[in-house]
Length: 127
Image (cartoon, rainbow, N blue to C red; front, top):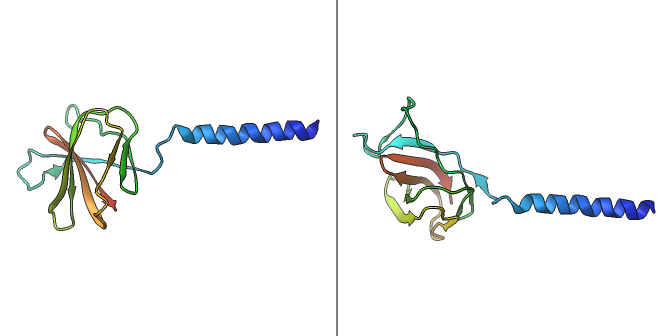
């Protein structure tokens, strides 16, 4: 009887761990910074002081070349900028898209930008 109870407990723990991982997108969480694209400095400047209403960055993860959004989000224009400051990729991300596959031919360090209106959420990534 103890063996059956132990086996059931082990199965329940395994199933619990499996189901817990089902709700996650995997990958590394992205820490976004924000800058104002209306700033006269080329590419905008990081926002140092909090304006009255700073937009909330989307919650996203990056796993290899897959950018996954955890929750619903606004529409954005995605830019990938190389180390020389050149734009190497641009794409429109519709509202509530869940996963975007970044180009597979890119490798190295890049700046990833999500632009909406006057605000740009950006981070640095390794592909």
